[in-house]
Structures are given as structure tokens and as C-alpha cells.
Image 1 (cartoon, rainbow, N blue to C red):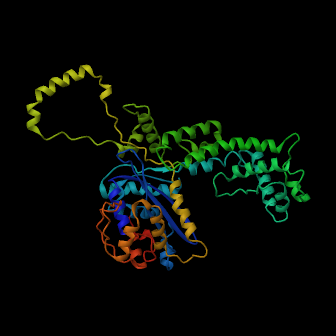
Image 2 (tube, rainbow, N blue to C red; image 1 turned 180 degrees about the vertical axis):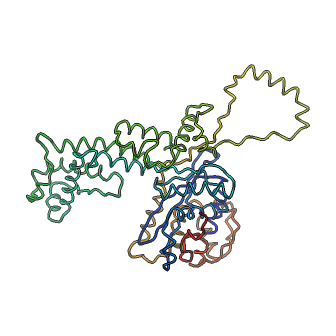
Image 3 (cartoon, helix red, strand yellow; image 1 turned 120 degrees about the vertical axis):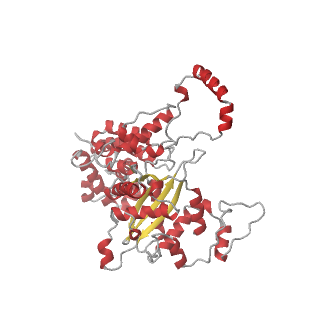
Length: 476
């Protein structure tokens, strides 16, 4: 674990962005944090830097002072750069759900920067676009906006739930191999997939009217296929609308930030809002769930200007303050005074000729660095959290949080270690490498002692039973 952390530390620049999300299971809450940046070659890596677990508090005093509020989340996020000898001044932005428990730490971080570092800047929270879209897609078929759609979806949901019972599954299996799919409130786009599966079963069973011997009670649940108001036709129209949301949702699942830039995300959201105005509360620039619209808007403008090869970008004062950390640092003049004085006349004459031949506008350098690493979604954090759910199944309820973090970190950092480093760590001394053999960690000279559960826990900040929670750091 020490070797892996040393490699991650060497790869972190002075400033980077953080993507985080949370997950709860069996009374424990864990937070996954990824660090992202732009390399010199233009690639945008995302590295899992922490997957800490907050244990249940021990005693009434700990329970009274610990509720995993905004301050606790901020302290957990602080532990991530602190593990790699960084602090909040290295944080360019954060990406997570647009909830108060996530937006409040950004304000606390800005206050911390001013109180401790005398740095006046905003640390923005970029709301997860996938989460915002998931909330927006629930508006058109809601009871207050689309009562007809809502009633139809509830009827289809009741039907597919009844078709899953043991008395109806045999009869349905005679007509089709398709199984009913029930809507899940916590799963994205499950309504769309439920309706699509329902329409496919309608085609296979002739709208459940023939070839399938259902009971009278089940027959009453089947939406009317014909008549003055064809519920099947209405379902098909609903699916066409939800399919547009599904297409955008699938696009947002891409993990490469360069393929899902903020400016294109903003364009898609604006298009959806024009198509379905009732979604503006979640998808507009200043929606109800937007903490601060200036960072997202400013970054989208900067990215659009770069794509159009423009040499400047027009931003408001608030937008400039939101992306001030992305300004290019001015280059310092050379101190070679002797050479400057010797060639001063030549340089002055050449500059005069250059001013005449080259238009002034073409020599203006774009003022901002590459912002393609500013992620609009935090879906990548869901992968290690899902892996945690796979590991901590009911038959493994006593797995230690530090062990869980170690396994998940190794799983998502496979490119930073191999069997040579593992063998050296087990034996307690670095192993000699074969001739010509190199690994990403060849330059690491740290000697790792034989691992035990206690030594592993001591290397994991906020991840072991010994440190009951990251909030004990009290940075916020």
C-alpha cells in the first residue's frame, strides 16, 4: 500500500480536481474520491486516491458529535490531498451530487483557504450531470406535470409486478422468453426499460389477449390496446420521449472527460429544456439544484472558445473569479542581461518589422489552460462503490474496512503494481528485477515491511477501525 501511494503521489501535480461520491451499507458510509488532471500529452487520467469508510460511532458522545454532515464530508475530502502532502489549495474543483452535504464543504474550503492561506478564490462544485438528468427525467411522467403518463406508468408497473408472480410466469413463458422488468426507483432510466420490455411482451403475446391464459384479475391490469384512448399507443409515445433522455444518459456514462465536455453537456441540457420545459428546474444553468452556476458556465465558455480556436473569451466578473485557478501563469523575463544588451538593437528592429507583417490579433495567447479534465459527472466513482458492494456481501459482513479499501484500491490501480512489487512487499525487502524489466514502480525505493491487519490500517487514513471517522481531523 505504501508503494502504491508513493506512485500516486509522484503522479499528482500541484493542483488537480476531485471527483467524489458516497455509499452506505449496513450502517457504514464510505466515500470514494478520484483525482483528475490533464497530462502534457492531452490525456485526462482519473486516479482512485481514497475509498475511506466511516464506521459506526462508539459511545453516546461520538454519536452526538458525528452525523456525517457537511463538515464531516469536508474533513474526509481534506484527508485525500493530505495523504499525498497536499492541502485544499491544490483542489481546483470538485464534482459530485448537487446536494447540500456536498455543496456546503466547497464554501467551507473557500473559507479555509482565506483563513489559512490568504487565498481568495472559489472552489466550485460541479453538479453531477447524470444525477441531474435522472431527476429531470422523472418530471414529465410525474403526477403533477403529466397525470396521464403517470397513471399509465403505474398501470404498467402493476401489470409487470403481477406477471412476475409464480402463477403467471408459466403462462407467460409459453408465449415468450421475455421476463417482466419492474421499475426501480433508485435505478436510472428503469422506467424507460420497463416500458420497452412491456411493449416487446405485447408484441409477443398479442397484447396479452390470446395465447396466454391469465386470470381475470390479471386481465384487468392489462392496458387497453384499442379504443378512443389506446394505452398502448400512449405507451409508445412515452417511450419515444424517454428514449431521448436515455440517449443523453448513455452518453454521460462515458468516463473520458474529453468525450463528455461541459460545453457539450450544457448544449444537450439546453436542447432537452427546449423540448421539455418542465425539466428546467434540474437542467437549466441556474436550476434549483445548482449550487453556483458561474463555474460551469465559465468552463463551458472556455471550452467552446478553445474548440473554435478563438484567442479570447468573454466572461463576467463572477465567471472570471470562478475559473481564476485555470489562468495561465505569466512567464518571467530572462535574467541574461548581457545577451539582452548586446542584441537590443537587433531585437528592436526585428520587432518593428514583425509588428508590420503579423496582425496583432494572431499573437494573442489564450489566457486559460486546458480545462478538459473538469468532469461533469461523477459516475466513475460509482464503480469502486459497486465493487465494495460486491465484496461486502451478506456472507462477508465482518470484513475490515481497511482491508476493503486496500482490495478496491489495488483493483482500480492495476497499472501501478505487479507481482514483483507484491513479492518484495511480502518478503519485506525490494526484489531485484530481471535485466531489462521495468514497471511503473521501478524507481520506488521504499521498503515495505511484512503486512499485517494493523499495519495496513495505519496506512489508510480514515479507513480502519482504529480511526473511527475522518471527521476527527477537524480541518473544517
